[in-house]
Image 1 (cartoon, rainbow, N blue to C red):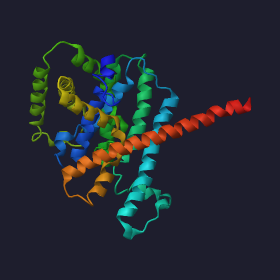
Image 2 (cartoon, helix red, strand yellow):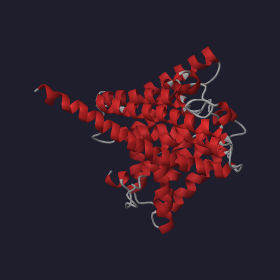
Image 3 (spheres, rainbow, N blue to C red):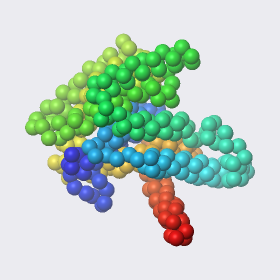
Image 4 (tube, rainbow, N blue to C red):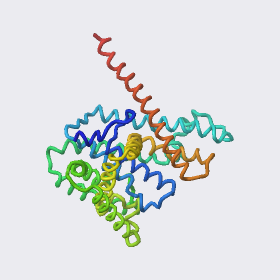
Length: 341
């Protein structure tokens, strides 16, 4: 799995990572969907790719996920969200001066900024992310106790029950209910790494399988007029859509390895991996940046590119700040035992 984690060579200190490449493709799909550049039916797979890939990351052999690491990831998530709220409240107050809103007004009406926020439209993702973190911890604990087939069957049963409950209580599908994601967590946890390893290691004609997977995706999308509800956010977690994700993963992975043989391809791979490394920041801020960029630019395509670039810079900034704060907090905690002694 060494080549899987650090595929190819390093360029400007950035890892060329297949898993980040898949996440990068997913975040591009999110932008295309939210900016209405591509019909939702063709990019409805975006969020599920994050779930599959994240599950594969936690499923790596020897991966340790102690309580401190969970707390670290939760703290990072809340830090990015809180920093984004203050950051965009400040930028928005500059862009819309007639409101004359003080920066600290976010403390006076937090409900407006965290729930009815006009520019951070994906705060629901925070709730989902926290639930999934706890589920990954649970999956790691039960992995030695149950066979993958048993866990997957149980995930399907729980997901079907969750579908029934959500439809009966609120008459629609709600992705914030984590039970509906169990199938994809199980699929990513038990199946994605073996699939990626076969694509990487097994001898085969990459161009042939790239073509086969692309043809299969076209055939699946040809069913869209017959089953429109299967290609919407309301039903994207259904296990009936797993074939779509299988061929999509094969297509993106084969493309990743084919690009290795071309100088320009390595550059494209680097960009994809860079996007994947900052998906959290891009996902949480792209609509906020788009709102601000649209005040200066009318082109949706250019605004989408600028939103992605801004999200990457925001991710770099928040990662650096959080690392410094976490190191500072660790230093304070480490100093207490010494002072007592």
